[in-house]
Length: 382
Image (cartoon, rainbow, N blue to C red):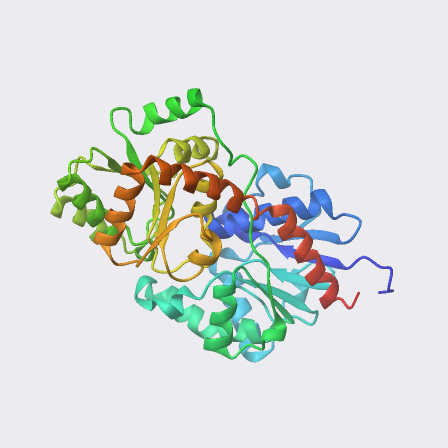
C-alpha cells in the first residue's frame, strides 16, 4: 500500500444487525458517517454474521458488504478460540482488507492489523450485574482481545483508565474517541411534545429514565427517590423507557414493595421517532447508573432541553460537564433532593437547560467518524 493509498477497512457492524442498544447505535452511526463523509480517505467494507436471517438496517443499505453465517455462538466462540490457540485464523471468513475494526467486544485472531473499540469494562467492575455465561466469556476473552489489538478506541476517559488499571494496557495504544448524538435530538415543538405525552403519561408530569432494563442502571435507587418525592406531595410518575435486559425481576418486585404500582410506568423500547419528544416532555431525566462507559441519555436529554440528574461516577461527570446535577449513585435521598431542587427552582432548571444544549453540541458523530479515520490511517502507517 503506497503512501497515497486509501486503507481498506473492514468494519464489523454486527451490533447494528443483532442488537438495539448502545453498541448497535455506535456501529450503525459510525458506519453511516464513514460512508457519507470519508469515502476519499478510506475504502470501507461492512462485515457481519448473518445468522437468524438478520439484515443490515436501512440506513446502511447499498454499502459494500461481506457476511458470514456461523450461528449465534459460532462466531463468538470461534473468535475466542482463534485468540487462545492462534488457529484457525478466521481470515477466510472476512473480506480482503488492510485492517479490521471490531466495533464490539469481539476480535478474532487475524493476520492483519486490528482496531478494537472498548465501550466499558462493566463486567469487571460489577460482575454480579452480568449473567454467569457472559461474565465468564468476557473475563477470559477481553484481556486477549485487548492485547491482540494494534490500537484501541476507548469511548471515554473512564474506559481508558479502566483499561490501564485492570489490564495494564499501554496508554500509547489507546485513543479516546467520544461517541455522538444525532441531530434529531434538539428542542421539540409543543404540539409533538403534547402528542407523545398524551400517549405515555396523559394525566401526570413525569420523570424519565432511558436505557436497557438491567441492574447497573440502578432503577431501584430512582424508585426509592420517587417514593420520597411522593411523600412530599409531588404528583410525578417515573416513566421507564428501555428494552428488557437481564436480572431485572427484583426491581419489578420493588415497585410493589414501595407502593408505587400506579406511579412507575414501563414503556418498553420507545420508537426512535418519539424519543426526542419523550425527553422534551420530561421534567427531569434521571441516570443514577452504577457505571456507564459513555451515557447517551444524558446528552440526548440535554439536547432536547431537559434538565438532568445523574450519578457522579464512571464516565458520567466527563459527559455531563457542568450541565447536570451530580449525586452519589446509591443515595436516593440525594437523588430526590436534586430532583426537588429542579422542580422547585425554575431559574436552576432554565440554567441547566441552557448549559445542557451547549454541552450536548460538543458530541457529534461527524467528529467521532473523523477521529476514527485518523486511527485507521495511523494503524495503516499513513
